[in-house]
Image (cartoon, rainbow, N blue to C red):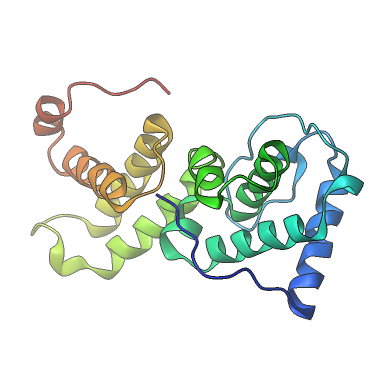
Length: 195
């Protein structure tokens, strides 16, 4: 599960980023899918905002900003999610549930939003290429890593899983098996969710 611990803090640097987030939100008042994506990031959620930007308290903006920074600074989050999109979803959910809602409830409720399959594929390709000693002998490293990364991205998109090392390891194992031994993969993983 996505986590966020410690006190929320603000400052001059955070204020500038909050302003940038507000500018992005003003450019897309009806939905966050018009948010400019971070380089290499995936697709934002399709939903309609139920509040006016002028009604967002500064504390809520700071809280969403803190969450976005957490996402950007946590490897499994930044590799699998569009952090700007996720911060907008966090902001939307906070406004919907109100100030009394626990952060963990908000985070859990948005944990399947804003996946970045392309970012996850790129990360897996790079890791695979850096570890040739872990690959079977006689395998074309670049072909295998390309297959594994593309298969990982496809599976990540199909399973629509929330974050967590168990989910990511399971998807990685399935992707590696599918690329190393497709026949074995069909027996081990007979069911694939639809695209």
